[in-house]
Image (cartoon, rainbow, N blue to C red; front, side):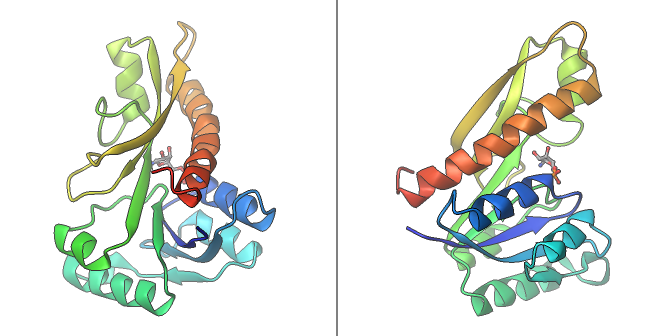
Length: 190
Ligand code: GRF
């Protein structure tokens, strides 16, 4: 199945850009119909525009959670989006939004869930001295980083790694994993 994808971001958008490239090159069949940010200054917005993708800012500073989600919902319906991809989107969607949207919503997280949910994952993994970390793509529910896992990639942590080197290693795996999962979803294997 070909999806009409919306990508939700809050920041730099490297996963977003990677998905856009995969769509534009034909590596995945789905089309990126829009990139949405809750932050007006998200770097990813510029990157999306440079790649001729329609962008939308729904500035959550000025809106209640309910208003934000209503705007988001209406925009997604207008664009006929049937797969919502979160990539560095720093908000939790409510149960009500997820139920009403009624299409697949997936998120990427830079750890091997259910370990290290939430923020500062790389630092916490280093501090805990775990030997392996990685990234996870999961369905989104109303709890933080808690929906059913779709797929994961593993990264070995070396003694020489610090927060930054681990972040870089995991991000490279994230880019691959997102495309792998999108291909799986297109083939209906999930
Ligand atoms: C990634 O590490 C992602 O897993 C997490 O936020 C980061 C976003 O990075 N949720 P980018 O904006 O895709 O570069």
